[in-house]
Length: 132
Image 1 (tube, helix red, strand yellow):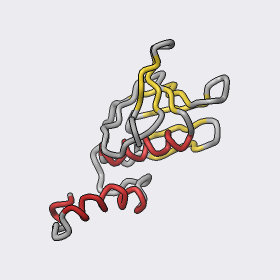
Image 2 (cartoon, one colour):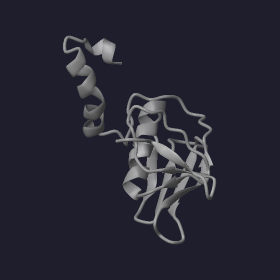
Image 3 (cartoon, one colour):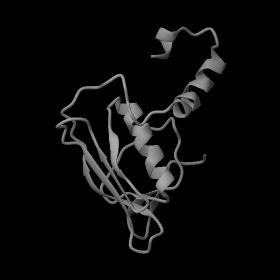
C-alpha cells in the first residue's frame, strides 16, 4: 500500500485511496473514501487505535452509521455520494464519554494477525505482556 490519502487540489477535500494499518486514523466531515471496504477497514482500525467498543449500527451498501456503546455521543455517518462513485463522511461527533474497553466488537482475528505477525517475526521470543 503506497499512501493513506492525498489532497485533491480541485475540490480541496482529502481523499482516501489506500489505508496503511500503521498510520493514525483521523476523520473530518467531507472526507472522501473510494469504496465501502476502505470505510469499514478504517473504522475497524480507528476502534483498535482508540480502544473503544464502537459498532456499525447500519452497515449497508449505500450508508454506514457507526455508534459507540451506551449513551456515548460518538457518531459517524458515511453515505455514498451523488454520482455513486465514492463514500463521504457526512456527520461526525468525535466526543467520547465512555471508557476504553478490552473487548472491541469490530476487531476480528484477521486484523490482529496482520498487525502482530510482523512484530512477532522481528522478535519471536517476545512475551505477551510486551505485546500489550
